[in-house]
Length: 112
Length: 118
Image 1 (cartoon, rainbow over the protein chains, first blue to last red):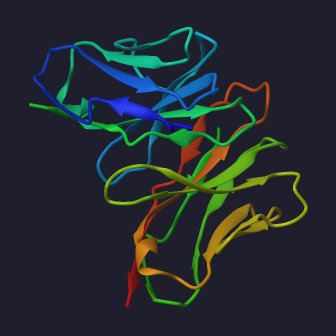
Image 2: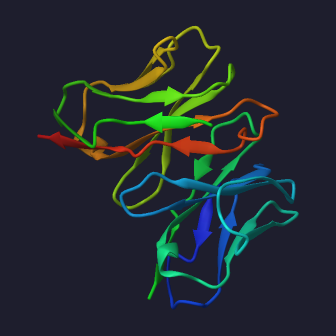
């Protein structure tokens, strides 16, 4: 059974650009959540998808958007990148809302 | 709103000794879940242990146990027989009740860096 995988591992972008981060959920997991973790902080919830529908959103602007596909994999898109978007982006999947979330290794995004 | 507080920025423990990492929480929900995660320097977030708010017994998973004191709103993690590989950042997190707007969302504390000395 494969765990949660994220790509790419590292990414460098400049201000104003757009980025897409990808996540493959653990086999059978239909719920995917995305988190932003700034250096030295705890992760902050961005949004969650359940069966291809957004199912909850944290305090992030609309330029943070996402998708979930029929195979339950997911994308996080960020438009008009800002310096403060530099962070580790974590994807987590769970079997359903009642089960612990299992995290991927994250994508480290640096904005220059 | 839910809030998690971890008041220990850093903790040190001798190898083979036990250590307690503190976590207090604030919520108006009657039903909620509490989690502990370990994050090594490589960045991955590793699930350690879960406690439901209605669970009467403290959760245990191998060397990890959760000291749940509901009236005090605390959920401390106890690691017994510390190992060098336990050195990492530890996060306490909370999830809201089923059907609520915060159900799928984990609210994390600021974390505690644990260093295990040989």
